Image 1 (spheres, rainbow, N blue to C red):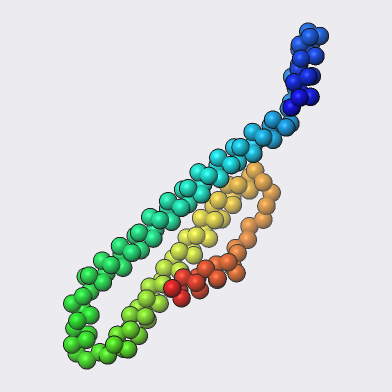
Image 2: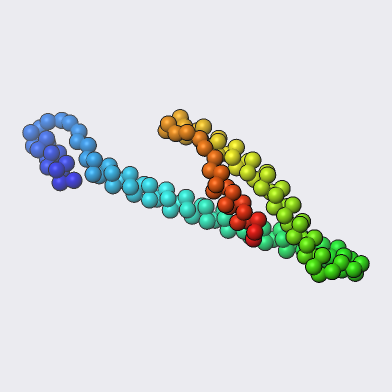
Length: 143
């Protein structure tokens, strides 16, 4: 930075018109810009994640409230607690797999669309991180 300032001073003293590119200042500006973008990106991701979690809890609680009579009928006709748990677990598994099919399909399509847009600026190859998707899917199905 001092070198750039010295060169600018000498150019102005010698009455020479020109420009000086200060790479250190440019690097610092870029680093700060990346930091600001990171903060806003992570903030947005956290906000969207919290909204998604709130929606899941709202959906589950509403579903249980609406199906209270149905659950009472199952128990009144002789469904045991073990059978009731098995039925609800199978139902959750079906809903989870249904969500995975649609979510993965749309997610991979969206990732490919982002890839196509960014591929114009950077030469990268598209890949689907199957191991990461599998780990996340199994983790969510277990919960």
